[in-house]
Image (cartoon, rainbow, N blue to C red; front, side):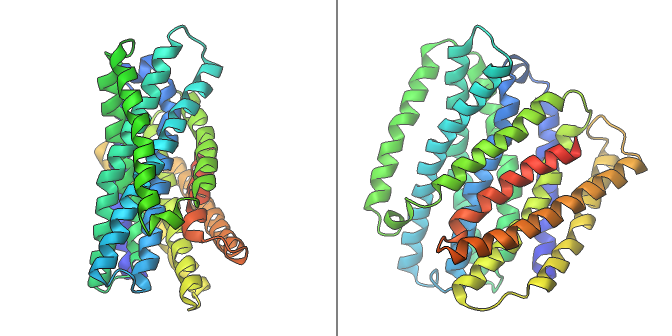
Length: 373
């Protein structure tokens, strides 16, 4: 576990650091100044993409460990079905995420350009979710297949990479799409794009219903993803309120939450595979190893922030101590939640691969952001 998880966590730190740096830069863009609801949308969409990609990674990791990806025909069918399924999920939930973020922002900041901004927010969320689903979904499928071929347990590597790359790619797409749409916010183009995205949903649904693998999977996983979206919006409200008040918060939040979520998702994915395969998981050793990996990963991140001069805020020894305590507390809470939630779902005949990760990542977003503030 240590040998396989540590390199991916270092890669995750780099990806999350770049995501934090990018958020620190784009928060000063004109589009984020004019449409402040985008700050609410950021953790919602990042959480959504993380949930969909990590659910995909968990499903494929379990399939790989059970040998279901060894057959070429079955592997191809499963991969195509999964890619179609996350397109359906990302467009559907992405649209709701954009609408929810806009309504929450409108509740606290009423303004006159409501209709145009609503369409822009929904199109931004749906476009971002769909594009990143295609990019990251293809990458995750390849990663799980190659991990199986090279004798690496996908449970140890897939979730951290899905999370870190997902945040970076999604944030690039979110900021780029919203910036491009700002000039067209009150034109028919935004509504045409919205209609096109909505029309794509029944087409993906029809394909998934006709596919032998996804036909049985479609009903599962919607409730936790929806619930996680609502929970993550609370983190978005906190971020919108405090991101300008506390210098450097935009850099720290993605990494603090991201590394903690990665460790919890590794544990959850291993527990799920153990339940499916009937092979007991050495929980105590796994928890100890994951806790051992946490603080060095976080300290590596803080060192990079200090050396590169990111975040516009001073990182003195008091900040290091406070950040370390918050990080350790968050990881302990998430590992405990992962252990309880995975067993709870399995005992009630719910597949943890579909249900557990969205709740874990959403709670990580909220608890981590609140603790840091």
